[in-house]
Length: 317
Length: 141
Image (cartoon, rainbow over all chains, first blue to last red; front, side, top):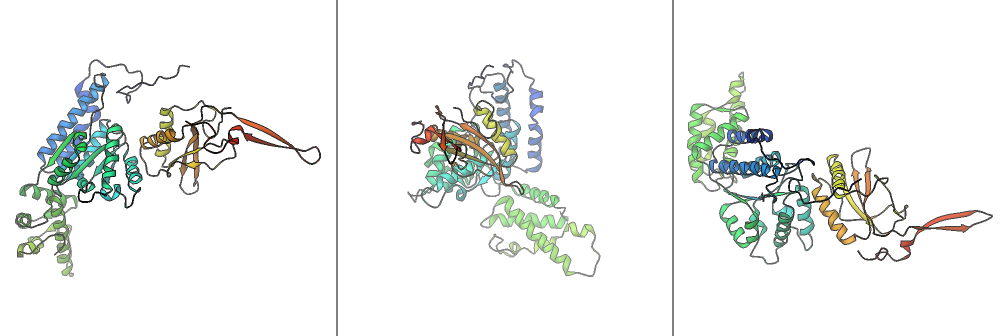
């Protein structure tokens, strides 16, 4: 029996015996991996974020072409897929990372398609010799999927030269380079801080192929997001309530600690609280499902934001 | 003398791809995968040293293959085995274990006969390699 020879084939994922293909039906390839449905879902469920969606579409096309090139034995390097997502809080970085994992999985660039979401605490240890095993443990868990590092700039603390973050960064960089085929790393964080992080760690910038910037949402987009969130929980605004919420968004945006979609979600949670309170305050009535679903203007207007108070997370109304 | 034990003991040594598929099988079953090594080849030596901790909650074999490569780099001259531990209730034991690395030369065993009371004979086996102290048994890797 002949020993199977080991060789560095770029398309090792393809079935053995497949010779290089010379022509490919693009449409069939496109439909076979079914990224169209993910992209459509992305369009449907994520409001706004036009530049992000455009970039994701571009990356998806690139990966599709890359996949075909591998089939034709034209590509012999594995594309670098590490990404960085920058943007303000609540702009959908984590949500997009989850979708990204799905896209990469369908195109066959990650084997399992799971996302391990970590922050500094999960990677950096508390004493000497603690960091390396901890980081390696997380990396092992993320193998075959996507490692999402939220607020990645915390890894690097220039003010403390004995900070263990540097050690985690070195291990990360090494694995990002050596095991590109096993793992995709996505870094996320605020724009300016990530910028500083990349400046002080040039190794990171060069190892990341795709830098995607998440813009803030406009007022109409935030309203659309709120209606999508409410619809998902079987609630709806009456027209006056919607008008009130438009005003709420405009006012809330001016206040400190505004975090886009997250603030909207918190506001909706408090509105649901007030709606429940209003319903319970009148016990002697028969409730229809309509009553339970409707959010009145009063529920919105009771917010502290309208009386000039703050609706920041520390001060719930 | 080629030592065999555990699963696949009747087969030639597994290739890395074959090891990877077996490890992936363990992970898909939800078992914790361990890497163990020893340089005492005696069949009754059941407690081998562990390379790192048992690896729980992994999804893909790539991480374990990397650990195995690291372990081979350090203990390439010893026996290394991979085992899959099933922690589910009722099993709570090793479900699969197989050798993934062995020394280049395995000198084998000597059979000792001890003449006991009457005409009884007691037998014992002793690995030639075990004559030397631990860590020097198979030369350096």
